Length: 147
Ligand SMILES: [Zn+2]
Image 1 (tube, rainbow, N blue to C red):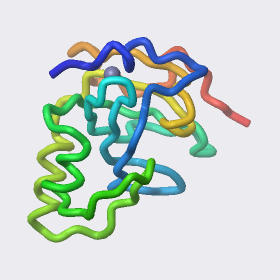
Image 2: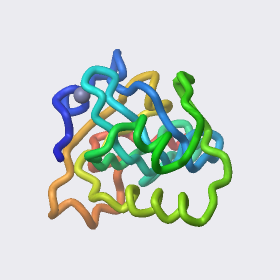
Image 3: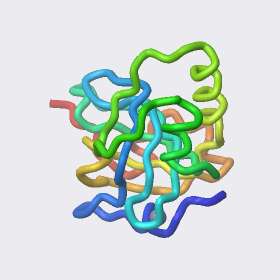
């Protein structure tokens, strides 16, 4: 499974991200699953870095071969719902392990956003030689806000 063209070409103005299942939250989403609103491909996302104010977050995206609806209903055993963002309640052990397996899919793309659903500030595909990157802001060509 690859990153879809909509995420690859994500610009600053319009976010390609649609519905989101949030499994980790700290003043905003840190971990979870999100779907492309154009083609429905689902991704696991996880926070790789954030700035001092935690306003801008850098997320790694791993494409998945299951839909967000599958994850909601079959993996998390949550009731169906149309909320754009669902905060996942504390999970049982079986569900937690399933989430960990999905979240372990390899990151292929990195985006910076204050809020994934409101717009992408920077977007770049990850290649193997980048995997040891420590300064994700510099790697994406973003200024880190030092104010
Ligand atoms: Zn797409």
